[in-house]
Image (cartoon, rainbow, N blue to C red; front, top):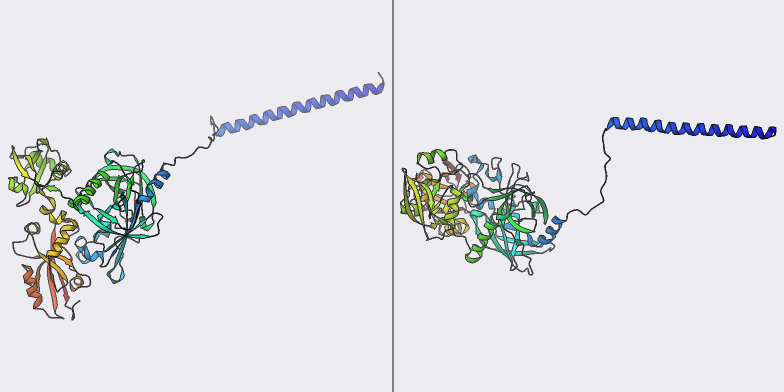
Length: 534
């Protein structure tokens, strides 16, 4: 081998050795670096598993389908009052001077939303005109719509607007039921209506999904969703609302939703949105809907007769949840039943022989455990039918035959409703002070603690009148005028005829101390007669 061949071979071996050494270094460096990084990573999240993004899937569109299905059946209702609703319903809201904050005060936890999109209650409007908004749901293709009574109560004009239709259609009231706050109206001039499907509210369970559609704050076809939070909710201390056992929901409900439907996941109406519990007047997660089973029963009565007739046996009773009820029952020798607080004079129970202090333990042989059960059985009985009522009195059980009477006639103040009110107005006597007055009934005198002569009832107050100026309100009882006793309508006429324009007039009146109070307080109201009649 030549010298040059040996040199070439040595260079090749050196290059190969160098290349091999470099490769080994690179491999070792990579392994050491990876090990250090792995050790560092494992130190921060030991045992962690990488997240894996799943393949995309289509989300549930159940709410979308329900909205498309029901929106054509939900309507926006706008009402107009020629005279201000506050004036026409002041018996529910006493004047601020009397210390009552009315329906808008912070103490009124259960806020009834009257549909005003600009705040609580009905907006102050010029010229004593008022407007309000609400919702409703079409339940019959012939144009019949179910809504709340307080949405259309005393409205002079009702207009209905449908989803996707810019026109407004005139509507008229077919009938109302104040105890359940329901009304049936019929739209005119609109054809091919789509009625909503009616569900069964008895099948609703706490935790079920629920969806509301309506016009909160005037925004048409607004859809909100939530769950059924509770069932059989009642309003505390509201005798006139004892027929309202609500579904509670956390679906967002606001002023303007009133009268709209609450739906299940099949797109069926299971309730009519009626009230909210709120200290602000807006949504706070608690809304109430009247179960559709109750609403359907009321609707069926209204389309047949124009009104709802309920039975009564003419008593008031101790609430089962009152803490004193167990002691009262025990003292009466009963472990359960309904303790009778009062018996209406001349009413069905009074005629049959029942007395205050009795404990009703059975009706037609069926045990009675609480007042709600008694109400359900009595109101479901036709007026004129007889019930066999078993009571405990002084530890002894006796049976009485009680003929069921008409609830609206036995308790006209609480359950007379709109028809009774209009009848009272037609029977009332108008006087030049700008009000209509009627004699007091025997029951009214008893409730107020009056003797058999004193007082007349203010049944209506005219807008812009002297009576309105001095803040007389419907429901007030006038006891005297300028210190002259008022015992009859004729007394008021006689006193007013002796007064001249510009003379001061002082009224002594009796009025409720609050919108829900059973206490009556005396107060004085005064003003100067105008020089010309208004």
